Length: 75
Image (cartoon, rainbow, N blue to C red; front, side):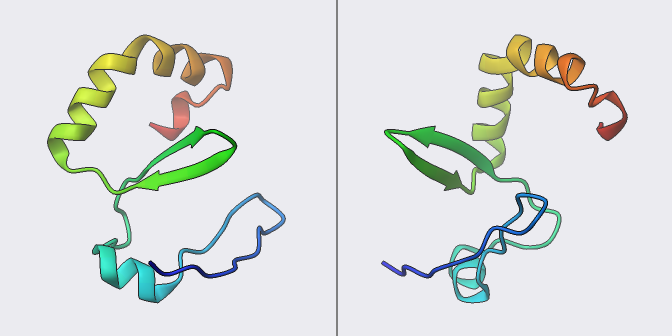
């Protein structure tokens, strides 16, 4: 297990260190799943089937959030 300290930027962004990106095969433009569990942030690199399953299970909530946060232009 690799543990590294990262700093949250002014826009709430973090950088995933290169050593971890390389180990997990995370490339620019790749989508990740971010979740919270028991006060911890979980970041997962899903495969395509997982993304489709997650979207199917959460499509109503996602659509509501897109509308609520006015994110239509982001998609």
